Image (cartoon, rainbow, N blue to C red; front, side, top):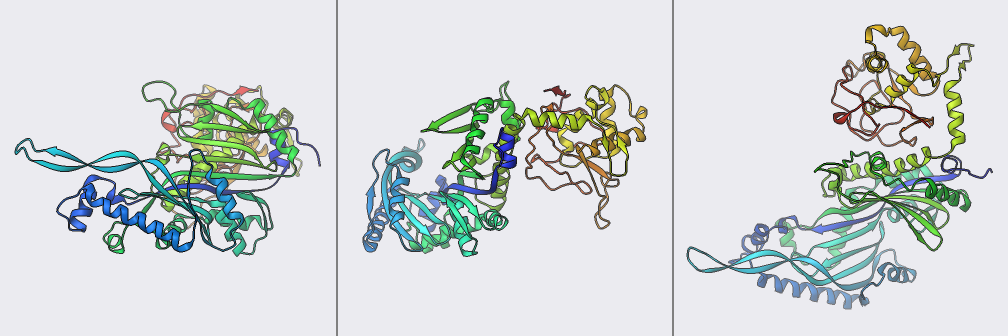
Length: 560
């Protein structure tokens, strides 16, 4: 086995297997109808029949809930641990897990004081009558939280922490990799664990299918199950009246674990990455990685700090890239695997609701996993001049087919070749592909001519060269059962990303795509939705594959 010389070598030749999975998820458990003042008033007045809403009515509920928690701890013989400031709860949990032998149950209960939002009663006066009345206002206070550290038969270790003040919000923390381990065991798939991941697996496709199947319904079922086991501040009558806990996403981690053949491969990877990728956090690179438009000037510039951080714990470095409230962390996991994690701390950064639904979780999956792949793609195209030189030679040299036909190469000094490569970089063509006529329309202004001067025969000659050198692929026509469209009436082509000396380019690693237009099937897609601009009449050319159709400018190829 040869020694890896670059990031591209490590990813192409030294990865034993890889798996993508939701990793840690931190969720808000709340009652939507109690999140605003009118809802709280409706709970006490409309539902429970009191004359008015006041914090005096909340106090008996709090005392009853806390007493029920202490009774639960005593009845089960659990330890009630008072967390000290700065105490690492994960390390304590591992100690309890080491001696826990049941399939599921409560490990221990912890208590800590934390700041939280609460309701308070404020006395106000009616200016007309001069009388006083109580008014509910939102405030904050340091209150007690109770942590329930548990083990579930399906999800493995998790914790649920409850606030002891009305409206008794809670937080749920799970790990998707632990869930996948339990499901793989039930399915009879052999594997070797790697902390909260996998070091080896007998059936990688089946394991990936398990990881992909984790949905909102599984997490919701976990919450409903344990709300019936643990103390609950709300009665069955409250839940029947619509005062029911729901889930929203506070934080979600999406991990890509790539198991390496030997530790030295990981060390080579990080030596190369840390040497050449300290500028990954720049706005232009962030735009490529997250597939989002980044505005750096003006009153509506994108918030957040664009930076790359290198953090070293002992002798293990980790790379951190930030975008708004999202972060990507890349590190050498236990000296055996390359772990790339995208953490989304605010779903609204990507235009998504916080509610835990299958639709939102699917969209977040696509964003998180695509960001992981794009980061690796950016790192890959930044390296390996040997492969780049080989690809350049293959691109410019003629090709002799099996039938003896000679297909000319794409001479890099030819202005027509530059125009062809420039047209392929147009982002809006990537999801759909393009037809002969569409490419001709784009090529004409780049060559300073008109479409009448570019015959169909010339375009066929160019498309033949591009296809023979692996830059595009020909896709079949639409099936007769589908509605024909102008784009699908003739065969079309799709750009295929490849390592060449034309930069800037896009990552070679494939990313999830949106539904494709009939008749066109690109090999590698992007996650941006299809353009609404008619392909036959482009108004301008984008300056980068990641820009949106609405802000498009001319682009230029640069020689590496």
